[in-house]
Image (spheres, rainbow, N blue to C red):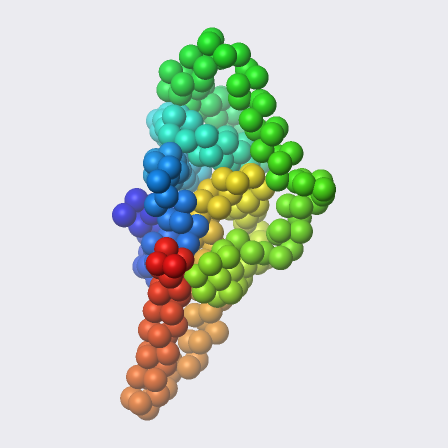
Length: 274
């Protein structure tokens, strides 16, 4: 429901996009595979907080004002309080979107102060967590686990090289009709980049580079890219086929599309039924 509200805010006049994005987030394996495990409470809260954070971020991106910057700070604080993964992910996305907004407004001083206010608000709201940890355990409590995760993930290869190889393979989804999920997400990624929108792809790549947590952190931007792939690439390609005057041909095409969506859905749930 939260993702549907977010997408309706982003694309109020494009119900097909809202439907495709909501469908993707509902059935994309990374969106729920970690959350249903025994220790998935943090990931579940983190996923919800990220949806709220993205909503406030896009709201501020469309209408920049002090009130919306405070909402961004609230979303950031909730991400830090919810889960270590959402804390790192939200911090990274904040930097990327903040730079994009500053470039868009040519480093306007008002925009800079509003973004600074959002960061301070997020720090204040999340202070019960990080301040108590710093007081009792010191900053090493945060730094050591993060460095350890990056080192453990790299193995014999450098972490940067391992991440680049992962991206070249583009195996974001590895279960549940993974070929089609990855294909549509990749098509959406290409479409957005070609049309000069870099904030969402950069956020996706940044979240993808986070060790271990990237499985579920990328679910939201991946769902949005999936919707781009469906509505901006696939539907325009098959639109001529929908002009069939023959009722039998229309029924055949509709049946094929329903079968295709059902296959992806069943494959996604097959991940948990195994």
